[in-house]
Length: 176
Image 1: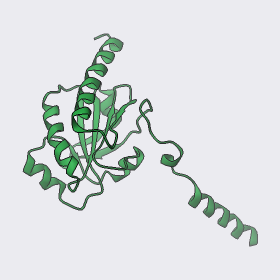
Image 2 (image 1 turned 120 degrees about the vertical axis):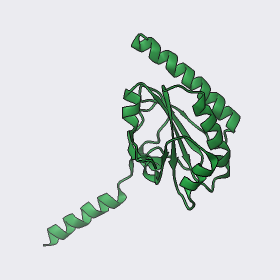
Image 3 (image 1 turned 90 degrees about the vertical axis):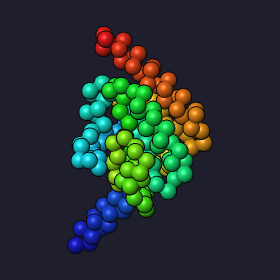
C-alpha cells in the first residue's frame, strides 16, 4: 500500500512539474509551424497543414476586440487580402476575448475567416500580446513573427516581401 501511494505521488508530481512544450521550446522563425484545425464563424473547416499542402502561404493574426492596435491592423489586413491571389490565406484568430468579435467584424466589413476562442493556438505559438502575427511559408516553416514593438508600416512591408519571396521560392521548387 505504501509503494502504491508513493508511486501515485511521484507520478502526480511529475505531471504537475512537467514543463509545457512552450517552456521547452519557444517557436522562432525557421521552425516548423504546429498544425491546427478550426472552424470559422461561417462553419467552414480549416487546417493549417491542408492550406500549406495546397500551396498556400498562411498569415495568422491573433487579435481581440479590446486591442487598440488590432483595430488598426485588421482593416489593413483586409485591404492586404484584396491584393492577394489564392496563394495566400489570412486567418483572424480571436483570443482572450471579452467583447463580441462577430459584431466587430460585421460592422467593419472585414472579409477574413474568423476563428473564435483560438487561445490554445495562441499558446502553441507563444503569442503573448495582441496583435500577434505569424507568417508561414508553403514549406511549413515560420518565416515571420511580428515583434511587439513593430509598427504597422513595417509589418505590412515585411508581409508584402515575404509573400513575394515565398511565391518565387515555391515556383522555383515546383517547376511552375
